[in-house]
Length: 514
Image (cartoon, rainbow, N blue to C red; front, side, top):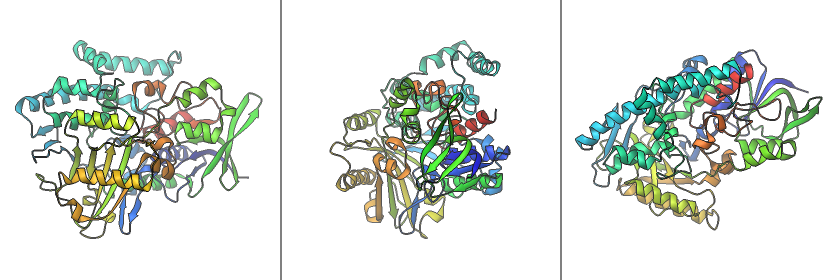
């Protein structure tokens, strides 16, 4: 029977990062992926003959340290140097554009306020930035390394100075609505800047659960939170990670779904000893590392019979309902948005913060908004392989689309919300309907079924203050180890959270090696 040092479940980007680091350390690593390709939500999918897209359509703060450590440039990945403009679309064509550290399309007062806002938010993001690539210790830990981490965090916050330190403590749990209203007058500027605190979450502008912390997380690193589409698209990054893992010595098996994690009793209690595949094959290992979401890992693969009831209840209470739908359009040409020379940016349709709030209100009662808000990119402008020559792919994240729709998701319901999203886009790109060759709309329920993530939640579980840092995903599993010896977590449900960063995979590997 095969035996490995580490078996990693799931070849999403975090699983690939963890596999590469562990294999580079000399471990014998097996990476098991249920799909026939790597990448998770970042992998390409052909939604119409000749047209491809991915759920994750841009990269904002992928770790440059990981890119360098894993020599990703040797495998074709280059960190993007040209960021996408973030464009808050206006129905009158007078759009708000945020790019290169400045904002256009707003009054002088808001333009000046943006410079001060950006300065302060950058300072706060820089203070937290080192800790996204570190294990956050348990509260009460007396270990020297853990005490140094806490001390470093406290020192960084103290170095902000009395004024900024107080402001950081004040806004850390502030609703996005309050932060935007305090700083700006222009409605579209507020939604454009507030969007990154909300996207992918079950939070609205008035939600009192620190979407601001998620904003600071996304502003980490050299990119300052700006978005880009790398050469070869998101799939190009995934391919480089896959090649790096293989070159490091990791073995990758596709179409190898894991049905359960093997748990055996020993002299000191239960321990993870390997996995069983869907075809019944058992593979043994010294440890098992799961990049699946916490609920899938503990409920579907481990089983509650092997867990303490208190821990089980905490995992059960994790908020994991996805609220983002995915729209792909196959177009016969480049889309034209009124007021834009070229649709080459990250375009936000959300005229007011109230529009976001009302869309959220509809979703929390199991309905789809009649006025959806969304983020749009045209990735084929940067990756020609996504569509036939002179044709294009439009990719949109549509908020808020409930995982559990009243009456259930049917084909008719998918068509209705997809058509509503297209109707909304047509208000800004009047000729879009005539350009559509084919459309696809994926609900959170579809993402759950197709990608195996509980609730179809991008980030595996909410990125809110009570589910971040030393509480992500929960006590006894926030340092990548779990209550089951030999079982580790390395996915987006672990610190520091979701998005394509590689941080959780990096941190888990370092914790295992330590």
